[in-house]
Length: 598
Image 1 (cartoon, helix red, strand yellow):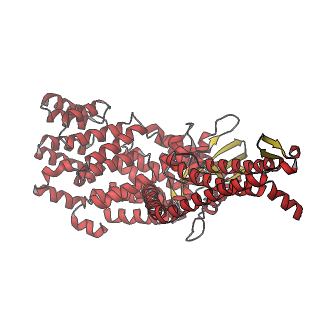
Image 2: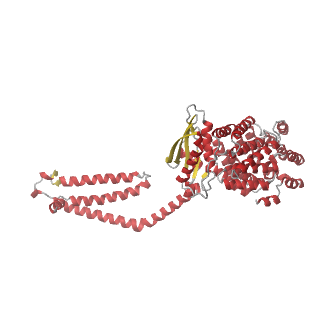
Image 3: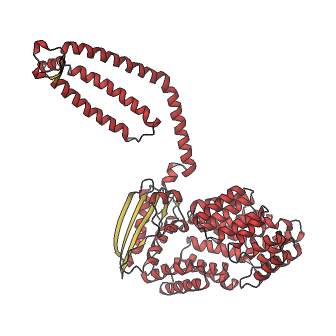
């Protein structure tokens, strides 16, 4: 061993190793400095280190096998020992090593006492800015990690005719997750907006502002079903959890519960009580229940009627199916809100269906919310409506329906700040929902934040350039700012019922005959809202005619009447004693607001 060590020193292998190590350290320091300056990827440092290790081994082998002589580099075995000058080369290497050590110590001192304090300060500042930026965008990490969107499951059935079933399963899992307080769940409108689109999962996560996505597929053949579910991390599209279930139709409820439990476990969600469970029913009744969702979302007279038929068939099979009754209540409320049935008939039926649902399941959030809607839009009992909405939010804190309804109620009483917070939360829960986005934009406009309102409506146009709802809202904002030509341009881009906006814009431009024609056309429509006529007379400044139609709206029980207090155009009526009398009759006075707790 002694002879080997002596030979290593004689051939200057040890000196070469020391010199190489010092040079390598300097190269790694320079690489570390240049990486951020040149915006080099992180793997560059690892590559440099690997190359230096390989070079170190080569340097040792070469220094052992070769020797530097006056005649050049020769193999060590070809050099006569008495003629070897390794001792001279060694002394030169000693000076090189000393010089490199001086440079190294100088750099170390400069880095430690000059660069280090300022660099640490810059690092701390950069870190704080990054943390602040991320918190502003996503909230703290704990909240961000506990957010999810449920994408519509793909229909993989042999005939491709089970889309209603795959969509329904997705929606039911979503509704199940909304009942978990510690979990942020994106609403159906936003989640389902990506249906049929080949969009990168990371981009979907960014647009919806969630840390995870639940996607999957359903294959149904007769009574046999295969459900595949995957929980995806949106930061890198990696799988957190996945599972495949081969079951029969009667097992579908247990599968939904298992998927929800897997999500809760994977995201480490804190439960305040037991994990919510899917309500079970007869498989055939459940299939009819899922089928009813498709026509109900067409929002047409025929669609509502078809949905009701399917739900009534399901309830004939299982009269104790609470979720079927609450779905029927939702459908009947929509029939009334869209004036597809007699209002009293529609709201009375909806109230009965919701109460039946609650008799079977006191914690049915949709039934609770629908009773609140009936109280607000038909009975005009806003105290009761507020109580129902709050109960619904307690049961399903992630459900956007009671949240939005409570926002509307708050706005109806002119409580702009409180309504704005609720509307903002509704948009956070359902960021691609155009109705929620349009309502938030209107709230900003009424508060004088027109630039913000316009940017939000522009975002809505990016989601759906053909949306009449967004275009109409944009037109009303232009009216509020006195941009009548722009308001008319927006009104001309959509079909009725924007006769009201068109009539207001034309009158403000002095085109009175055309404005009157719009009013006449509106009054001839099948679904005339008395409040819409009052809106036109308010725009025209005809106060007496406006009150005449507001009284008619009260007699007809027009549900749109309750939004009048929150309408900025109605300011011209506020000094008239008839205005306060109307608010008292409606139950929209400040006294009523105090009873509700607004």
